[in-house]
Image (cartoon, rainbow, N blue to C red; front, side, top):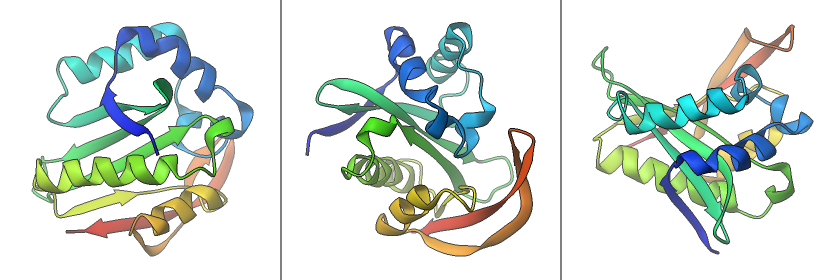
Amino acid sequence: MNVQLRNLKLNDAHSIMNHATGPVVRNLGKVAQKSFALDDIHSFILKDKNVYRVKQINKAIMYENKIIGTISLMIQEDDGSKSGELVFWIGESYWGRGITQNAIKEMCQLGLSEFNLVRIFAVPIFENIRARKVLEKSGFRLEGIMRKSVCLNDQVHNACMYTLLK
């Protein structure tokens, strides 16, 4: 399978906007909380290149030389926990092909080896069965359900804490 992660580029903004604004993708998690106006996407890309490189790694998910999503690892160094939060999404037309699983494995390898993390976690909403399954297939374990912990589109949802340990 031809899946790669690469650094984001400013000219990725239109592809990100096209894939991330679909109604299904927008209603499944943290992507729903973000603005996908072109200026906001440019700011997200520039953040990765400038100030926050050590704290946040943002990568484009590439499939057949096209950007189809993003994956980020927010490293939590301030509290000494050696952990990072994984956030990912891909365009709906690319679901079910193993692409996300490959991207997750690659990003986690980067976090565990290069940044010496001991714990990577992801927090999908309870209803996001696809994200939960891909995390489990990628070696993550469900630690618990956080009741009424996420508000999306004016609705309160339960969230699931998944972790991958070194």
